[in-house]
Image (cartoon, rainbow, N blue to C red; front, side):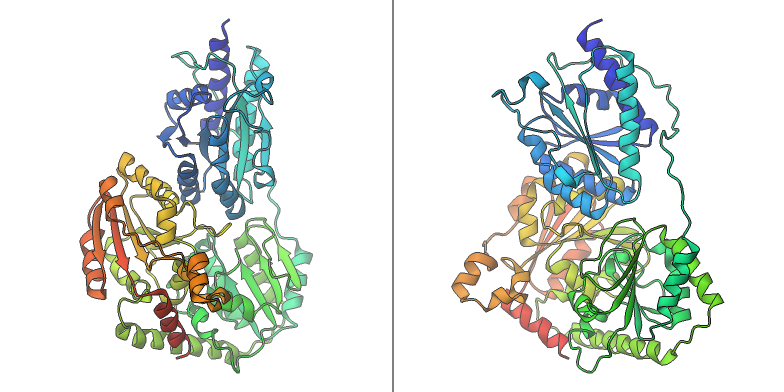
Length: 565
């Protein structure tokens, strides 16, 4: 048999096993050495291929797809620095628990470390930022290697999918010729997992210890961080009612607005902590909270953290314990144990925090209509009202200022609005591309981003043009890095600060919209913003709304005036 035939059978076994294990999407970056894998994925017939030229952008596109689907997405590159361009998205996927299967083509062993072109050391290229790595063998036609390829595909899907989700990396060396046959081996595989995880229920002794700890505290908070929290909402509310502790919900938890007892205004009223009581204990579900004010306020509290994704996420080094396991099952067990215990709660504690919440809601309602324009919070305050007519809709929010302003000014969203962000490594790279991946899996997406994050990932706009994606991008252009004006660096000499941190660019983005065939509007006032949003939100395809806001120093003054009341 020929080498081409052997490689065809080998890769047929691999890609058919991927599909049988649940993989239905692949993002392919063009290249020579990866030709056999690209052809195998393309010709498999049931895996949908997306072909994007920029590896960094393509990786974030795949991340966005996997983020909203919860299923592993394949990501393929050729050898050399192309594979290295996946690194930022791989890091985000690892820390944000997003399942990716990264396939990198490589030179055969005899060409490694020999000066061969487009050859780097790809063995464990992503280091500790993948859950599993396999350097694949070169096939010689042995049927055992075909079985190995299928088994490896199944294991890759399994390791990417078990909690915590995350990326895995398979490195495929190929010798020339880099082709496969037109006809691939047909699949006879059944979607039966090779590895079946055991399902462990919460240990009764552990649950009793947790409840015993709770009996020692009266002044506590229930914090709900980013994650898939809606399925556990009933049990979270039940726990709050039993303890009489308030629920502080991160905007990325997507439970704000689902019940009137959920508090979302804490980031604003905790800016002034004068006369606020000490928090004895917190119970946190999911990822750490976005709000720095909240994290500082509770940093010395005893912490009971139910992660729900079997991941240790406790960066504040608080005393307490971290509980792994299914979030809903753990909550049910805690609530059942609380019913058996005599637990004394104080309704005045709960009432105190609800009063704070309603006072801040009233301040937001009274302040937002009178903002000097154009003020950045104006957008977040009106977001629910403007998006509800076109819901359901998925909204991706960039890091730095956008996700923080969302936390403060977007309250009680409709349940048909879902918020997402890349809060694993919290970078501003790949923001557009991640949104495009979300749009590829959903009917539409909205992105709210700053100007620097938009500039950083303009290549991501290509996916919308190529795949006719429905994406509305709102670019908040304050001519630089707005977040730094809130940090201690802002006290530096003005010229030094602007050079190193403010980084004004003087760019507008109309020509970027023109390049990718996007509908474009420029807004400089609140009225213009509202009209432009109304014009664009009902259109299809790529739309870019550039909002030129007040200067960065004025934005800081406005925020502090609001926080101080």
